[in-house]
Amino acid sequence: MPILCRVTRGELTESIHVAFAVAIDETGQPFYSTGDSQYLTCIRSSLKPFQAAASVKAGAVKAAEFNDEELALMCASHKGEKIHVKTAQSMLTKLGLTVDDYECGSHFPSDTLTRHRMIREDKDAQPLHNNCSGNHAGMLALAKHLGQGTANYIKKDHPVQRTILKYVQDVSGLETIPT
Image (cartoon, rainbow, N blue to C red):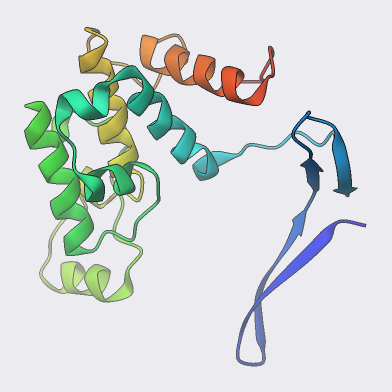
């Protein structure tokens, strides 16, 4: 039976999540599983720490002189608050890039207060507000460090994505990863 996670707010259930899990020992052998251990899923933002680690391993984070806050933003989704936008902008500045180099798109902040303030002030959403902007700045750093163009850095055949895939293959021990 899969693990069920119920997210509540007071008496109200906001969401229910199903989790399939496999725990392995140091030799890679499973010692516990629940649900369908062969279930394929899109890991989405949970890949961010691995994407950041690939950039660290390649030397891109050091070359860009990203600080701990900037590295943390590479590893996580954010809510588009001022501190997040400022940190992402700092990363672009260190790279000599602008928001026009982002390929992550724009959306309003998920932080309610920030979103409502922007709407009241008739401000448009920018790529810096995208909850993935720090992660994308990290990929842009990797593109620059690899000596590759930043255009199309999100395409699976770009050297940035191939570098990340190779890193995930190396740390997971999987030769084939569905893309």
